[in-house]
Length: 238
Image (cartoon, rainbow, N blue to C red; front, side, top):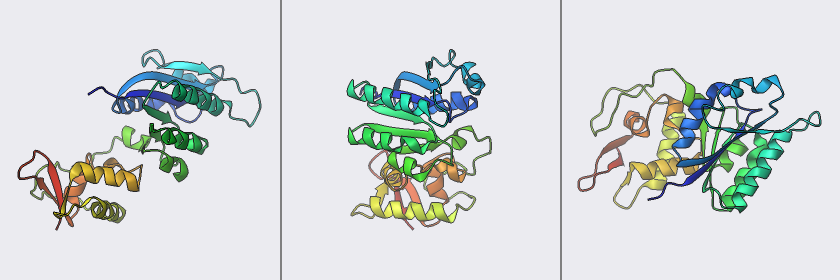
């Protein structure tokens, strides 16, 4: 199967160059990255951290002068380019790298055109922009050096786990109710899809676990095991 084409569009005014490698690596997991562009005023010192990594990461810088004080010309340039790419059918997946709520309508417009929208930004990102994306990934989860709490939990047995936050357990149960089939179980992948429908920013790493499987194993109300006849993990209610 052909990988989806991915366009990565970065708001340099809103995301630090310190996160460049982590952001590009995550974007690469969405498919084949064919477009890498970053927008900002490169005559200013604010973009110097990005300047150091642009060549190494093959990101094309787009110069946008701040012609008027208080107006974000960078946002306008990114939006115009994004719509050009859409109309030329250049990509199936658009990665918008920003925490700026001004891109909310852009994300909605791309989805209306049956494109997948992945946002990458900080946890401070307004909920409106987060929910306008198919998936939203927090930069803090990509760059955190803290040790995850999960202990593997790949099989059906219950290993010792740290308790998961109540809000995570509540979200898991809501998603399970949506994903559960007539036989009383759901596949792990189906559960993951249901979670993202409820909250595009859902990520097991937010709660200190490396993977969804580890988060599920840590919830005492759910049980995960291998399907008897299929090579897949299934989740049931305890």
